[in-house]
Amino acid sequence: MQKLGIVLGIAGVVFTSACTGGGDTGLTGGTITGPTGSGSGTSGPGGSGSGGDGGTGGDGGMGQGGAGGSGQGGAGGGTPMPVFDPNKDGPFTIAEIDDKQWKASTGDTVPMHAAYPTEGPSSGPYPVVVVAHGFQIAASQYYGYLKRLASFGYVAVTPDYPTSFLGNDNTKATQNIISALDWVESKPSLQGDTKLAGATGHSLGGKLAIYAAKLDDRFQASIVLDPVDGAPSNPIDPNPMCTAPACIDVSEQLPIDKPTGFLGETLDGMSGGFQPACAPAAENFITFYAETTSPSLAVTINGANHVGFVDNTLTCGVACSACKMPTLDNATVNALSRAYVTAFYERYLRGNKGYDTYLTGAKAQARYVDTGIASIQSKP
Image (cartoon, rainbow, N blue to C red; front, side, top):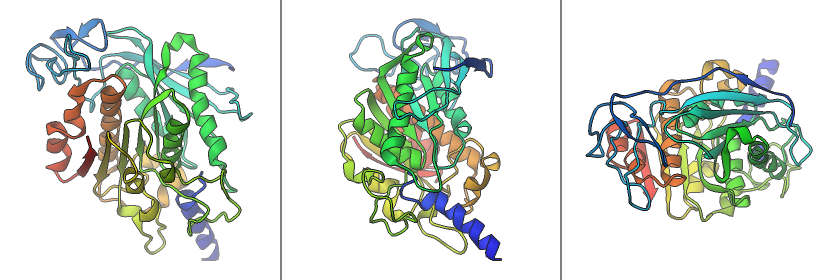
């Protein structure tokens, strides 16, 4: 029993620690083909291509093709920007690339994995989205987000920055995450526009992604997944030697003058039995949202637990066994999360207002609110 207690205690540290805090390349995974339709229409910023879910009309009104038709207006007038359903793969084919030897400016080796468009309705340069993994969760658990984003015409990359049970330097880890933009710049074949970038992350990675968006002007927007904040004063911090700037209360660094979004849950807000509070209520996503200014949104996913945002909780190891048992399945949480991340960047990096329906409007209400899956708050 004593050994079991030690194992459970270490697993709890995974999510309660407030401080959780150019080499050889090769293509992997082949290509993924997005959905195609019979209609034709404008797709992406510039260029023309095949529609999304197909059919004429759609939610946007006039026009053919696209999950939402082509009647949704974008920024600046002119030809309306197409709206594809963010819950499905987009119109671009994609490829993936690994670089195991990237050396960040911190001196750390930070392996990179990216998905990027290879063919589609528009050509590059493409916006870049960085996705930061959670504490002690494999970067590969977020590849699904990269593929979905790439199918919508983004260069999406996850940096496998190092973390440790012995303590983590939030400032250094944030610089390792930011270095993903430098890596993309070193790969011109990816056609990434690093001056039009988004910062996303989960848990510790969510906290650090918001901080990265504050520090680096190349990030123009940030949406994060159940971020957990913390500071030296945090009573749940098992590392009393962690002080600023190694440990940072990022919610206290808000607001930032950029669009922000927060997806989260409240099931893991309190400990119970052998299960720790993986995302304590005093440090959870709502505490971030409370400090933001417009535009910002917060989506509470009912019945999700802290780790339900990963691609597959069955294959992510001990980190995904530390939290409470969810009542909403992993596939539903992950699908909602991918869709929100995609719609958010279509709205705030590309300026396509047609995606408001998938964030706070009619589509979001029908899919998530009316069905009891989620509740939505927003600061328009």
